[in-house]
Amino acid sequence: MILVKHNGRAFMTRLFAIFILIFSASASSADIYKQVLEGMTSNSITIIGETHKRTESIQFFRTLVSDYVQQNRCLTIALEIASSQQRMIDRIKQGRGGVADIEIAPIIDHQPFRALIDELIGIRNRGNCLKLVAIDAGFEVGTRRDEWMARKLAEQVNQTPLLVLLGSLHTLKKVNWNLYATTGSPYVAELMASRGHKIRTYPQIWTDRNCNTRSRLISADLPEATKLLNSKLIALLNAAEKKKASEAIDGIILWECG
Image (cartoon, rainbow, N blue to C red; front, side):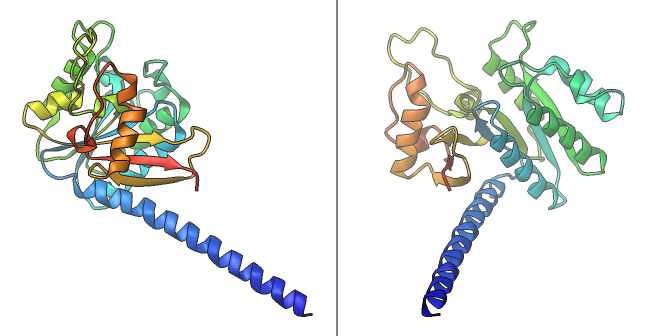
């Protein structure tokens, strides 16, 4: 009998511990959305960086949009889709097509991304003040991709905040290319920042591609953010490591094991 009571007490202790962990993770996630949303003000551009074809990235972006529109405020969303597809997106808004008709680059295209587009159009068609724009350069455009996207974003800057989903490298507001780097050119975030736009960027980073049950926001002022930025993004480039992550980004959304 004593053993049963002891095991019951142990079980309740473990259950309470699990509850605390779940609650903490939920609170942490809610805090991420709150901090990002607070920066989405008039004339602002917020870029969420991603590794393409990650379902959790799409879910994060979807929740961010949902939380924002519940405030009954206007929002413009820009996606990494060739701007030549804007006409098709507008046709879908009018019920004259489906998301399967949109041409999306294979490196980006996956079903959750198309589902996101469909949901965003649905949010807009239900009367919410939401605008969806395609800003990427297609093969027919004779301009560097980031320069093209910067131009398209500049066309949208107004009182309505801009929320953008792009590959994480596009979030870098400053890259110190090595002397002999032959491919080094500024990314869209750097182009927009250098032209005086109010821009905040948050690349998403994964500690383990197979373990993504918890996310947290790491301020760019923290050494952990600098270490992650250099090891996960700058290491992909022929560029010098950053002494401070805040030179290039505003924070990192880190996905890790729960």
